[in-house]
Length: 381
Ligand SMILES: NC(=O)c1ccc[n+]([C@@H]2O[C@H](COP(=O)([O-])OP(=O)(O)OC[C@H]3O[C@@H](n4cnc5c(N)ncnc54)[C@H](O)[C@@H]3O)[C@@H](O)[C@H]2O)c1
Image 1: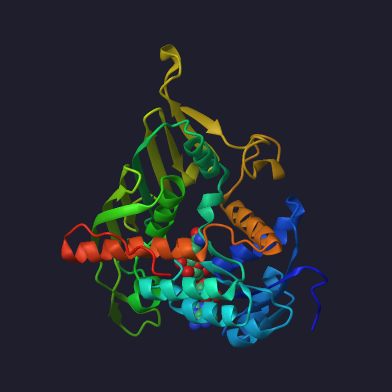
Image 2: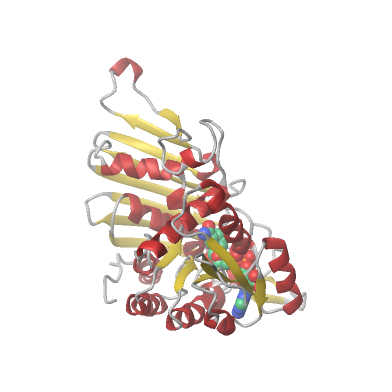
């Protein structure tokens, strides 16, 4: 078996959408950033021998495995990266932690709050580095919003208003993929894309104290993927909720896969006592900024192109104005993870952050069922 020569050996489970995004990040990270330890793409794991071998070749992995249990036991794997559907996260993550590995897990951390609590506790006990891939935190414009909030330049935060909108399942003949099955995905739009805006809210505004939510499934039956008939959709197509933050702000959240024409509109606005910021992933290099104490004659939102050398992460890439894309958020995530492994500190969002996100998703579902305000479970890890 090839040795890592001081590099961090990575073993990745899954190789499709997120598998491509993560593989690209491991390939790119040292070409643009100084990282404490470079990664070695030791092995990718899938269930089908031929398809996994082809994926290893296409994505740049040195070898492949067809059983994640073998992958996590390999001496040349230091970090296990989990990019499979939610129903597999718990068992793969627990096996990796048990084998003493660092773990990066795709979001949402788990399919249920109970699983998330168990995984966060196991990560704490393992003492290795853990992280959840809420990659949007690491868009430079989102980082700039965070800086403005933390420096008090928006004043006291009063409003959070977020909508993560997609439209890819609007056609009723779209098949019943794993994302539409509760036992595989945990929930629908709520856990898939709503989880991202909950994480961003936690990052930018702070902990959520209580929620009042609703969910809806518009298309209740869909064709099975193998063409043998139809099956029931067991997750939400859309979710919306109100929230109160512990810090006093109020928030609205909307997650939908039925927002016609909105392909991947992950957007938020924050209004404080001294100003506002607004972000939309489909224009992800820009942050709209408003300062209430600007001179009256030039007051208004300005659009900052967040590509200057001094902006977070941006300086490592191209000259100002040479914009970044979706994939860069994963490179930034991997950079911070590799640095964290070198220093022994888990970079946020950690599994504990993933658990807190899951607690909000769980509270929204309980609120939608009971039609009452519900407080997310808090602590217990
Ligand atoms: N961070 C983000 O922005 C983002 C975006 C999309 C998906 N995700 C998350 O990434 C994860 C994977 O989603 P995806 O879009 O890549 O899914 P996908 O359907 O494109 O790929 C899933 C992969 O997992 C493999 N797989 C499925 N079941 C498996 C099993 N039992 N054992 C081993 N491998 C198995 C499949 O072969 C495939 O390679 C999910 O948790 C999802 O929520 C995150």
